[in-house]
Structure formats: structure tokens, C-alpha cells
Image (cartoon, rainbow, N blue to C red):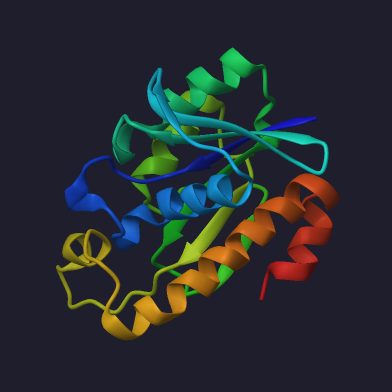
Length: 186
């Protein structure tokens, strides 16, 4: 059984460790914990790691957020991975900071990376790990908020939340989505 784990984010040092790049940070930690490393090949930073007999193909698209579907579609087809075995890790403004929610399908909720995946990969029926980043921004400041780094107090919580996200991904590939949702969705 193989899986495609997709951490969403934007490439470049100006986006590193921003709220919008939490998917990249979680993908980095997953690969690090499983002893892998990334190579820059074909539309993404790519790594292949194993967890309890499952093969995990982990990508961080280099297409920028708004074109994430291009990379996801390429790797799904290249690796022959069905949509239900693709897990997209994404930031979510609608959830409070640190709240994790595994969903098996759903709308993009205005998230451009998810919109691109929907358009290019066959709809909304793919699993996604939504990582809450909160919505503590003034009217009209959403872009600055999501492209900003976590504040001082939030930064203290982030490592444990990333570890919890890695545990959720490992659970998803070993015991499946239903039991993982019961264990992790708050």
C-alpha cells in the first residue's frame, strides 16, 4: 500500500515557517522523523519513506500554492496512487490555532491550493489534514496574516502541534481514516 502525502506551501525563504506554509513544515518533520530527505524533482521536493510497511511518497510542490494541483496530479499519475490515498496537509483559517481536523472530502473553503487540486485531480473527494491557524487578523489583512509567521506565544505551541500532525499522518496510513478521525478530530 502506498500513499502520497502532500504538504502545501510556497517555495522561497520569504515564505519559510509562515502560517500558509505549515504543510511544508509538517512534511519536513514527517520525513525527518522517518529518516528521509527531499530531492527537487519534477514540480516538487520529493521524498520516499516507509512507516510500518507502508510506502509514503511525500511532496512539497514547487509550483507555488495556487498551482499545487499541477504537482499533485503529476505525482498521483506517475506513482499510480488513487485519490483516496492522497493526503493533503493544509493551513485552515476557519479552525483555531492548533486544532487538527482530518476530512475525507469537502470544499476548498476558498483555499487556493485546494481549489487547484480540485480542478486538476478529479474533485473534492480526497483526504485532507486541516491545521488550524486561527483568524486573528483585522478586516482586509488576511493575506498579511497567512503569509506572516506565527507570533511569539504561538511559536511555543507549534513543535508539539507538528508532532501531533505527524502522528495523525502515521495513523492515517496504518489504521485508516475512520479510526484516525475518531482519535484525532477534536
